[in-house]
Length: 101
Length: 381
Image 1 (cartoon, rainbow over the protein chains, first blue to last red):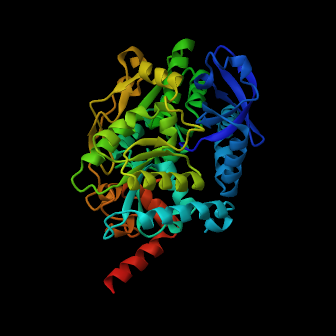
Image 2 (cartoon, rainbow over the protein chains, first blue to last red):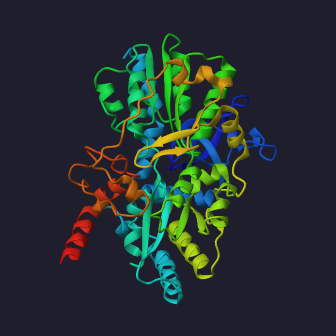
Image 3 (cartoon, each protein chain N blue to C red):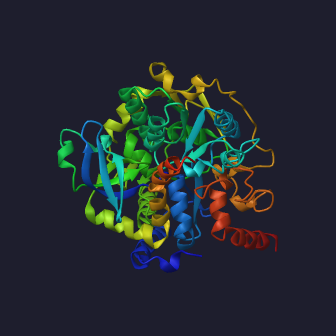
């Protein structure tokens, strides 16, 4: 929850609600980017930016080199896998609902 | 155990450890006791154990593992209230996975789910809002926990629900704020701490300014730290340097993520949706003034406490627990009477055994039991 994971913004999905898709080590999911969009960083300029993602919200902009280093350390210790599984969880929720469970 | 050996930056760490040893050697200090440094944040506790940082440090530095694990400090009464909400047939109770195992006085959320309650693990409060959107006939309640790191996320989710006119969504708010708790620890008469590692991701939101009182009034240094082992070692070195030079300042080692001024957009969202509670109960520490937030009247319809008239249970911590003393650095986890016996990660009695970010669970998992017993035996012999 408090860990935070680096992701790269690959598309803006809803500019009004500030919803974007990030790629975290090959896993993609939608996040909210409200906290990293301001006058200096208008929403359309965010694609390609690396951000630190906490519980589905981009909370800070980081540089690519640091992002790669953080991902490497998380992978080394097995924390990355747990976080990626966590990030993909809502798909399961939807799937369960569609099956009427 | 998966640490130290796999830690490829060991060479860089050695350079920092050498610098720390050199500083210690020339420092004027009371050599009858170790320097006690508290890492406030549970994320740091997790990293410290995961990477074996304590084992790398000279014996004259002792890390005290602070209260910054929101799952650990969640009191039983609030879990009971959450379970009571989850037991309502119309409710889908959405929660971060971390909170599932926290024991209540009757049961945990995991047990409630096993007993037939509709409890769902989600990654983000926005996923809980999506559940509300897709299930208009149900009431979706999100279990809001965490410090300032996650507080903006639930505030922004409430604001999004308002924009969309979603009425079947609410937050059971258990968000807490770290600064009053640091103050409570500093005010405690048995305090011996020499300095603090500041919580990097809380600081990313609130900035440096809220900690100024620690340096100014309590004359203790703090270094806001990142979460990687080199961050932690460098921050300890920065703290020692302050102590050596007789300075007490709030320094920031983690500027690559945490700006001095914090994140103003996040703070605005928090201020719009939340206000301070008069007090909030912490497992292991008791009631602390102004240490929690609640949803403002203007957003009252998104407040699960109002919507469902929760019982507001107050359950005392088990008497045998010594979490409070561990949190303040008065005793080590393994010195607690129930550590590893009545209190284990499978059946936690106390707050600090609940999550891997809690000091006792970390000791237990990463070999601390053995170390603790060795040290206990050594002191007897």
